[in-house]
Length: 218
Image 1 (cartoon, rainbow, N blue to C red):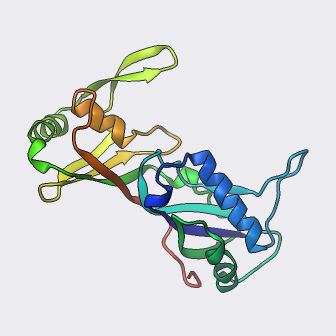
Image 2: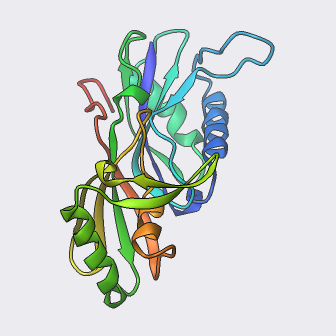
Image 3: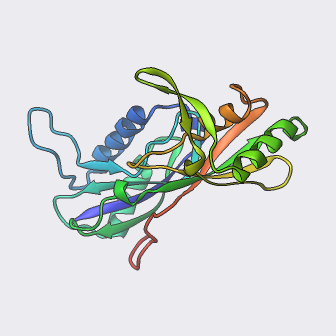
């Protein structure tokens, strides 16, 4: 069986890399003493899969990982074992049990929603105009860094929605996952001519396509 775990990533963990996040979760799982399934080979490690890597500097209200187990445990037992072991800045929100043949997390992700909050919303006039221009266009080119250097790239198909919620909060719905995605900071920097003025925080609020908590989840 697998455990599907929804967790949040707060201020204390916003600047750790995805690799450090994986290591922190692995340590918490080992301390939990759950019957974790390990890979084979010279350097076995927990069979652990995350839905989507989170860019450094962002905080997440909801993120997900799957952990494979050797035996069956109830979600209540898993919660009692794992919740106290999570490090500061990472908190379990819910756990559900899924079968080994259930769809994997990563292919389910096609997009992610973000909230950008600005300290000085009065400075956002240029950004607001540029967002309106982008959303009205069929093509929006930015200079994107590739292995061969900077290359003009049309990012408009990767922006599902962008709208203001009040004066200081910008909601973004962007493509994400294995089929290609767009980092919200890259988008904002492009919209602001290479620099994001007065940017206070970006909050990852939800991942599209994540499974609902089924009966028996906690």
